[in-house]
Length: 484
Image 1 (cartoon, rainbow, N blue to C red):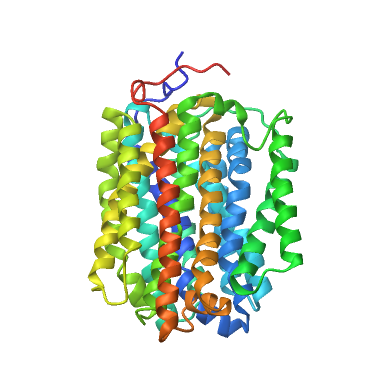
Image 2: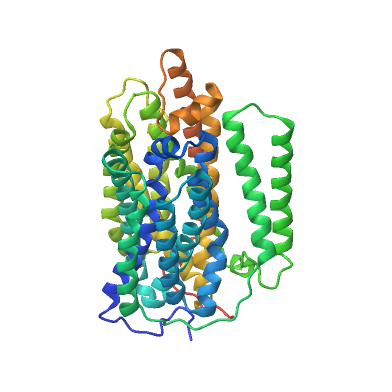
């Protein structure tokens, strides 16, 4: 029997099931953007310093990165729907505790808990879709799932600015509580376990080594963006790199590795995972770089700066389902590769923004970037699932999120580091969180630094295009049997 042949026929409740899944992705996406505009208020309220408060973002992303494959594995073991619902509950609890945090350390700690819930949601959402929808309609389902991500980013931007302007920053977390609880109730009635349970083992060594390596590399990059390089930072970076190398070696010897190396035997899966990594590495920093440009150089408030980017997210969300339908007809390689190419064009235009361009140019470029998003994500997600055996949907979905999240975390830190090379380092953080803006000669210097970061992103996007094309187009619409 074909591994990809769904054991369940389409059900009337599939629409409700998709709505719940999209809601989960939306909630997780909200918390990748909603915190950005609240950082200055948080810093003042909690009497925190800049280098510390930045970990309110970094801790959340890092935890999701580390846990994606592991909690996807839990979904294969104990049920993807059950783990998805548990993720909602943990996310709600973490959000509530973040909202009542009394100091910086508590907030970062509860963001870690929130990240555990976000990992359970994001890692199992793709697998739940794969279990619920047959292969011939899965692309469309992933297209609607992309709406959740884009809409979540929009909601995060709008709510982040609105809530911190007119209410307390604490409500950016507390608002998740009623939404999450309502989603859990609906999920309880409409989501059904349809996948087979598979025995799995947790890879504690792999998770520990990857976590240590990424943390030390990120910590070095954050420090480098705010202070001169010193011997301690070099030692941290070297230790992080060694940890990552040891992680790769250990994974080749594990019976149940964190990165399921057998999946790399499939060319489509390998190319799709690497495309996801380089796309995320190149494109995630766009939001931060553009906001730094608008706040630091064009003197806009954080809220007004973010509002210029909303149309791009709207277009991406609107086009996602249409892109998904195209994937079901022509395969993944062409839509994904074209989407990446369109995003590279958007990055090129961003790299040529000056100090006097009309602000509507930013909105126009964001729309181009949104079109690229809509082409890439549904196609790439569908390709990973079509290339993975049915019993490993949870692991495949988790690996996809891990590759994308590693790129996301490193993209954020890299953008900060490169953009800060042309100005005094302590100003970069202040510009990013919106507590200061530039005047005089520093404006041109900082703009040059932002352009350099965008050019690097274009190179990374070109690499993503290469991997996307390497998956091939001949059999991309067909499902290939796998042996367990």
